Image 1 (tube, rainbow, N blue to C red):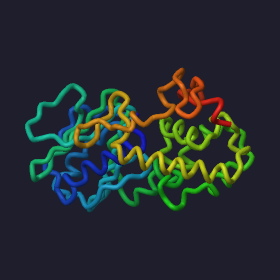
Image 2: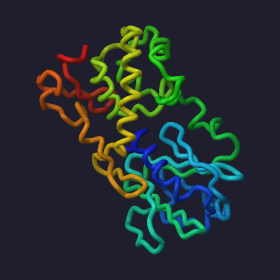
Image 3: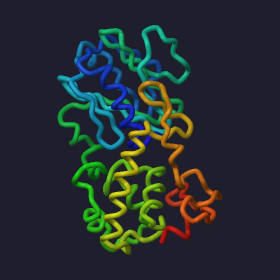
Length: 271
């Protein structure tokens, strides 16, 4: 599914095309996503100008004069710029058409995404208000992780994937960051030292920055705003490599399930 780097790649890709543009028409072909698209959305958006496009966790926020358009890509969604008149395929559920002829198309085969309209401060919305800090912010640090971990017995991989602790560290990047930091994914969060958490926070940041620079990771469905896949897959050291040699020591990588998620690690390099 699109994780933080993929969503940030999408934001960077579409922003130059939609910023300062006004909605001319919104075509909703399939309103039944994770939550129904508000029936009044086309009327709410028509004529409004996009003042800014930001991201909070894996939510894209389009700032308008009277509210905020919030989009989540779900498990298989994508937003991409297409030319006017491009034929819609089966899973192309929504077209946002702008006054200059630009079309922003929302595609979602599994329909687990969301397109919502927010009144007031977006940070106070139920889906956003209790989220943890952004992983690339100054607020996120090893000290924060160590403090929040306390005496918790939850596996550290589940801990760093908890959106109340830090947002956007999805399964792919949790696997990679833990490997880079040499931390076993099943180790109890409360049994990791401050120095190791400082290293883990550093590796989380660096892994995400590298993934964003590569346009994200395309495993199956994801394409960026320009319709192109992400290339961080070529840099993955553990995720998707179960049974293959560790890039550091050569030992065969192992795979387990943690929180119903695939977890790949090196039992020799990660302790």
